[in-house]
Length: 365
Image 1 (spheres, rainbow, N blue to C red):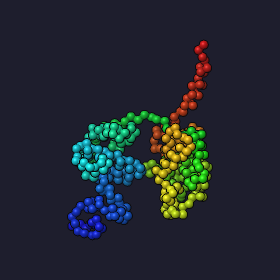
Image 2 (cartoon, rainbow, N blue to C red):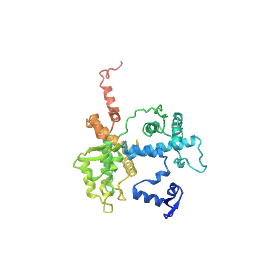
Image 3 (cartoon, rainbow, N blue to C red):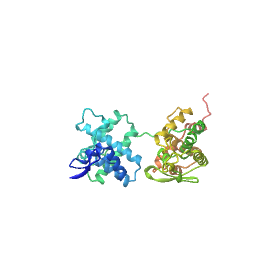
Image 4 (cartoon, rainbow, N blue to C red):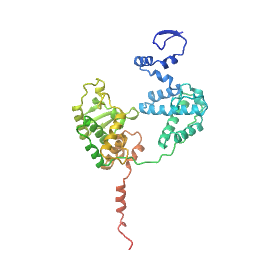
């Protein structure tokens, strides 16, 4: 007999599967999480092979939370699709997103073949509107997952993703604000708004430092030392961001007026706080950027926080004569090929090049 907790949190003797009780008992789940820091509910949501892989990514490979979450989403979607595709019983009253996959184990993984993966990629393209970039990310996830199952976990002998091809990605120029548009954006903020100094500081850091959205949200005050800021970037890699006068001024002005009297000591450590006195989240920043871009009349393109990152990189490259290697370091890119998208030549330079041809002024008479 195993001593467990029933749904009323009373000790009892039973042979009932512990997971069936955990599944129905939120209080128990939270109690375990608070005591041990373990996400018990994941037992009922994910197959063990996925959980083991995600733990490997975190502990061994040092992947960031965002990367791990993306891998998790891709794998869960694949398993749900294949459960339907391979003819497993699915109750009539269940939605696709709610299909349980915790019952799928090693035998299920061994049954997956290359054609299954291509069928899934066709499904997400036609039924879920995934473009080449989204499908290419899923291919990268599957290659990593099955490589782990074959090389590390030794669960499969044949890797179905070895010959899996990624959709062709056409190189695209990054969307960015011009110098004049950037100035207009900063000038358009309402100085009477209670969040003016915070929002101005956020936009200034995006446009001057080119940091990622997740990096900005996680900034802690004690990591700011003079003109340097230490942040944790993609892949949990630490890097130093150098702050110019505009950034330092914006930070100081914001902190001098920030009202954090209702924030907890832990929350006060973060630079940017929301109206709820908690560290600002990514969605809030996305919405405020969208609002200010619209108010500035910049409606020709969808300018997101990532587009502001593109703007900073492009302005540094075009106007600051920053070389590509320095730009790679500033942006925290692991591969120089990622940074090379900023070496694009704009239309004005192309126009000037055409007009500089010595035959440009010779006309047919």
